[in-house]
Image (cartoon, rainbow, N blue to C red; front, side, top):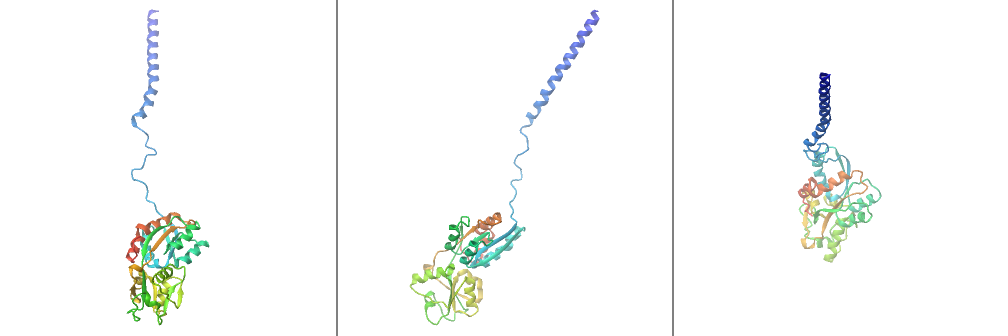
Length: 277
């Protein structure tokens, strides 16, 4: 009996020890994650944020004087963003504004003056514009300047055939500002809807002279000669650009505006003779 009692006591002690060991195991297991720090899920990636790309179609409405610069920038833009398709619509700034007001599918508008851009700002059709370039007026004449034109006052003399831009077209309005300052009145043979049409009148022999921008004279190269307008007479010619609020590709539109300020478009503008804002 004594041996039986001792055996029972020994068995009870063994069972108690097993029970105690089993109850401590979960505590040890639960404490393990705390030694490894916070979880990695949701941590910032080591490679940084992904590069933003723009795709789809982009319709840029731009003043005619921007034709060469914007076209020159297009290969670089599409090379860096191969999924982007850019279409330009060049013309007189006032004509383009009217088209946008009537619902034309524009994503970006670049104007040759502040007045036409302000029409769209007032109508609530564009985001806040930014100025991206400046320019100067210049007289375009036939190569060799056969009429010996030396300045704007000569354009008011009889015997010359002159073409100017229509009212509302920035270059025409700028020219009339200078006329008023000089106290002269130029009587044009006809009024062109934009600077490219005006300079074509000279290259075709239809007119002896016109007033366009210095960049237009440079773009025409040997087809015309340029007669400078004195700096003291130059109006403040600034080019604003803005995203059209109805744009179907706002991301690409914003990227184009940024490029006009500091990217491929800006470099093309400088190469074409535009001045920084």
